[in-house]
Image (cartoon, rainbow, N blue to C red; front, side, top):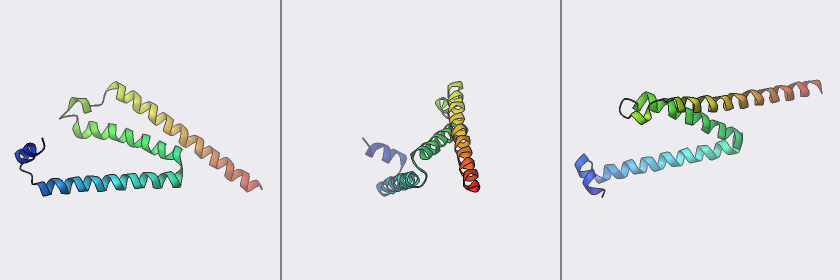
Length: 110
């Protein structure tokens, strides 16, 4: 199944294995940074970061791939999703900021 497309593309097996190793290394680094974030900023903040990452994927896939594949183009449904996600992110950021400001003010009064 794989040999024929590799040969048709003119790729060597060593090149294919190098690409596979690069993907594996990238996935390892991605997973390691995710778990590092979990321990540093917590599960909720890490989830918020993943939501922002999803929005970035929406936007970049439109910019980079819309011309080649219509399914990657921005749609009203994707736009609504973007608004909902970013509203949640902004709400979380504002609530967290207010909580921290109150904590600082409370510590100042003590």
